[in-house]
Image (cartoon, rainbow, N blue to C red; front, side):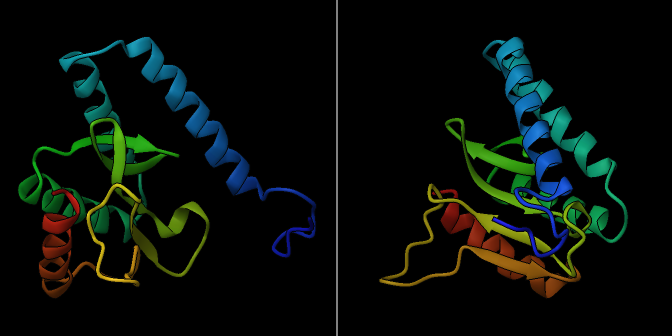
Length: 149
């Protein structure tokens, strides 16, 4: 398969870096053990990932983090492919993919299959975010309330 962005076959450099980052996360998780100390380290990794983001991704991630921790405090902050993410029982429910990660036009807030967003036969699982306004925050909090169960 040829990557139309690079002209190379296989994964782009950003995709390869994300996979390496995920492998490193898994190794770290295995070393961290279990329990409260592990959750604290994972939460700190999430905060560190947010702090390392360039603007406007950092502001979007900070506001999303606040929305998650206030609306669904039972979700555990962690990283997933280097993205700030939030898990329930070890499974990522929601995450923020910064625009800077893959040099895209907008950040994406996504929900995985464990998110309780089912709405009949068809529903959205990701949302493009150019600016995390108060209106976006209100909509996101409603989605988070449903998604987190």
